[in-house]
Amino acid sequence: MIKRLLIAIVLLAVLAGGIVGFNMFRDQAIQQFFANMPVPSVAVSTVEAKDGSWTPSVDAIGTVNAIRGVDLTVETTGIVTEIGFEANQQVREDDVLLQLEDKVQQADLQASRTQAALDQQSLDRARELRSRGVGSSVTLETAEAAAQASAAQVQKLEAVLQQRQLRAPFNGTIGIPRVDKGQYLSPGTIVATLQDLETMRADFTVPEQQLGLLKIGQPVRLWPNEGDEAFNGQITGIDPKVDPSSRLVSVRAEISNPEGKLTPGQFVRVKVDLPQEDGVIALPLTAVVTSLYGDYVFAVREAEGEGENGEKKLQARQVFVQVGRRSGAQAEVRSGVEPGDIVITAGQNRLSNGTPVTIDNTINPGNPGDPEGTPEAADNETDKAAAQ
Image 1 (cartoon, rainbow, N blue to C red):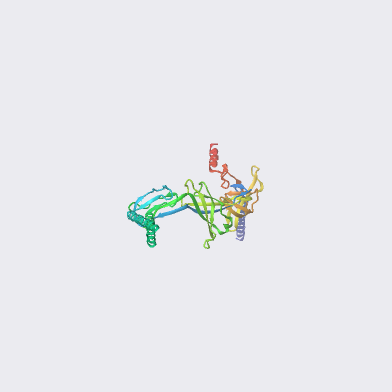
Image 2 (image 1 turned 90 degrees about the vertical axis):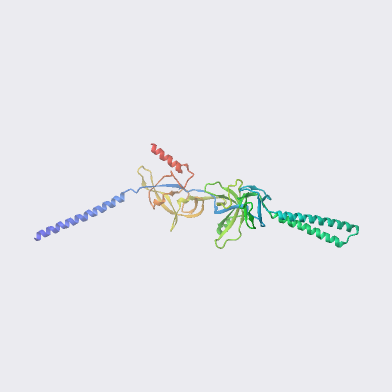
């Protein structure tokens, strides 16, 4: 009985030892497999860091308005008898745009002119009699006062009559009529808008830290929409006061608009170019990654060993950088990157320190000017590969 028990214990110990040994062998084999398994390379696009020219700028957004623009209204009440313009018509200064009913004023003016003529005749007779020594000085002074009063009354009624007309205050383009013939108008009623579109002004704001970079006469460029042709102008005014609530400074620029492409009230992007600087390293914004620990880029470095075909192995290395000014799609890098470094511009979301990489600049967002970096070029390469 005891002998059978000992044999069972020995067999159980052998079985347990075999199970433990198998598990240890399996874990070691799995560990060796993953340790020796090659890490797949990640395809990335790159640019080479170079010392180059940098044109800093002050970027802002603003609104354009006509250099001269008003909403026209009448000075007095009355009924519209004539509208002398159409929408988008070019008008000249002092053109009659609208006429109010003025029969009563015309009659008053005619009566006043008749009285003025009569008073002038009386004055002439009084002067003649006075020269002969017949008339008195009192009579002459009374005639002069009457003549002056009549002349003043004529001028007053002429001014009243002019108020019955709406004239163009300057040359420009008039808008859509907002009144109709026969309509009764009162002062303050807007008849139409008049805009001088030959020259426009752009109002924009910049942070107070950039106030010292701007000056009167500095050239500016602006774009209404992405990809549109730039309009050139210059700064004509800088507000001497900083808004204490927003810490912004108001700036105004004048822009020539001979073809009328700019419209008052239009939103524009404004760029004020500053003097060019040399020896600045600039990288595409797509290359810079922002994190809680700071800004960094991935640089391509050579790894130990060689690839399957004898080429050099490449890997990505995280490099923290100090980013300075930005201009368009470029960012100034003040430290962390040296000229000649190869910096990754796309594919960073799949990278970590030491990740093997292969460079493929077929589509390179960091160098859109390269023909090989355009989507059309990539499509051509795909078509060639399919044909082969």
